[in-house]
Length: 69
Image (cartoon, rainbow, N blue to C red; front, side):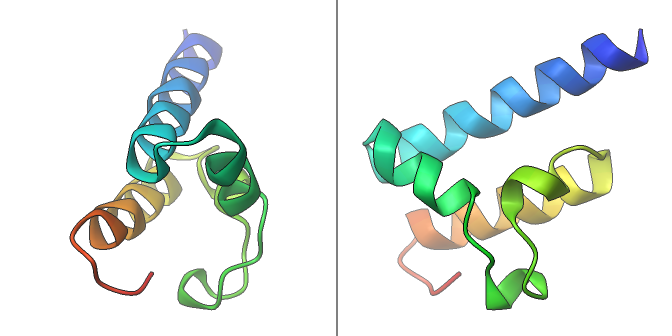
């Protein structure tokens, strides 16, 4: 059960990144890049937990609205 929740969370967040950047390659680069706004952590590592996924989703929403993330 926990593993399927994690897989669904990862898929949902990756899909959100792809929609945000409108490009699968850009989304992948962003997900694998250490980001200062995420304490120099990579979004792909953070989305392993619910709390981390929320941080990544918030960052993606800020990008979608034109704010730096």
